Length: 76
Image 1 (cartoon, rainbow, N blue to C red):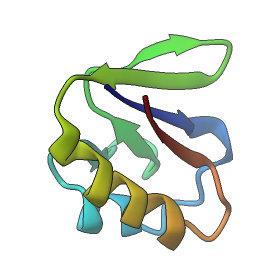
Image 2 (cartoon, rainbow, N blue to C red):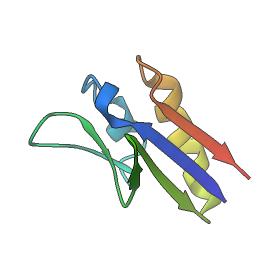
Image 3 (tube, one colour):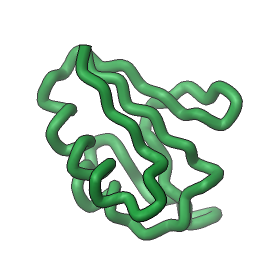
């Protein structure tokens, strides 16, 4: 199980997450911030849980590239 969390409000719109993990992240046309696809929002933390272990590597690359460190990825 891979858990990905995004603190969307702190996003600066650099687009790295959408470049490294386009199947999980998109940039909003409304405000230019990152959107974690199919995520559930709880108090500003947008989270997905996926059984796809292939999700870990691209999401981890996106998290490492994020200049404001608002993406976390865990594999359990």
